[in-house]
Length: 377
Image (tube, rainbow, N blue to C red; front, side, top):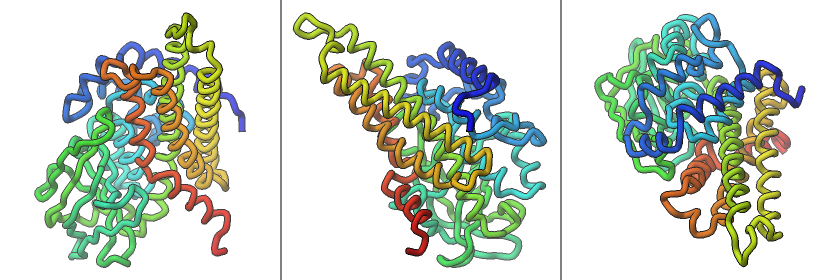
């Protein structure tokens, strides 16, 4: 692979950075934290006008037709800005799984409005008490022409503001095949409740389904087992989250280095002390490793490389711990100031801790990598 971004990707990176610096100051992030929706319609419309809401969707359905590398470039900048928008839930999860699992007719039905930003979707996989990559246990009853769902999903990203919910269920029984059902949020029997979360800059909800009927044409893939499409979507999300965490780590490092140059103790900048220097050097190493893992795994997905799944899992395993470590070191460098509400650092720390388990924790991803390496051994 080429370890450098090409000219078009560098332009995308710079334009994303410039846009977010101009339109997404931390004052805006803090304002949306206090809003249960977590974003403004105006900012979402700006993302749509930039083409970001359809960045990785096919051109045939109104998307930009770009790949995981371009998505990673944008998400790194969004992570650095803590951009308050349902981008990860709708673009990386909801629209992505429809593009991968849906029939041609289903793609034509949902993707154009998702690409344009007129509608938003999210993916509901996590069971109450489980994890985002844990086993799917919610059973959908078979009925003539479709399914009927009763139960709940937990920690659904932006589940209370999405127009459509892609719900992972088991057909008929606990051992039944996996199905992905597109459920409009406004249908009778669907109820979404925002829940308090570690990271107030990214909203999640508990969604309950009370005898919700799903017609056959809303079951993605015509009822075929959807496991491969779901796993491919999760790999795409792992890469995106790793890129976001690289952006978070870079911003924490930048804030910490700037602070170390100006904060004085014993008449000297604390950046002159070896202990602080070593912390900053270690943070830089971890940030660069996160970025490298994100870019390589994104390239592997785009190229269909044999190790693409393993690369995505390894990237998530490393970045989820590295980002939390970098954010924690940033707090340590800032001392007591790092914990104060007026400083932005705690917001990055909370996002890092939330991302640590957002798609399953590091130990779960190490188990996935071990399984790929050892097989049935």
